[in-house]
Length: 114
Image (spheres, rainbow, N blue to C red):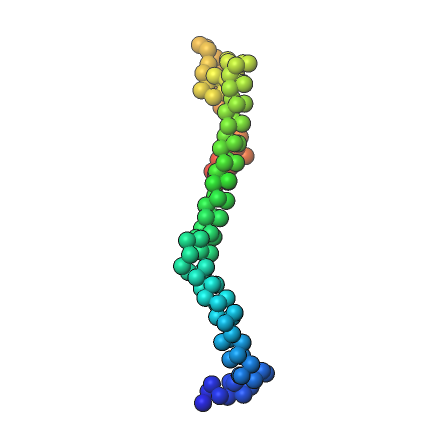
């Protein structure tokens, strides 16, 4: 009973819909879509997961490039001014010398965020 009332309210006659749905091209298209979405090796969900993996790997690649640039800068500093590098990185000092360590709050916040 409910189906009849729904079909009566529907703006198109049910015969046209039945013909359209039972058309061989519609059935073929529906079967193709079901196959591609659920059963094929390159199904939609797998493509989505692979896309997520690619974006994560690209982000890691950018992070590593940033680290490489930082290490290259450290190497450059080490080659140019070894004493300054040793004092800043390893807090080395000479005898009778007082060392005051001042920490940068912004750097601390950045390292905590990462």
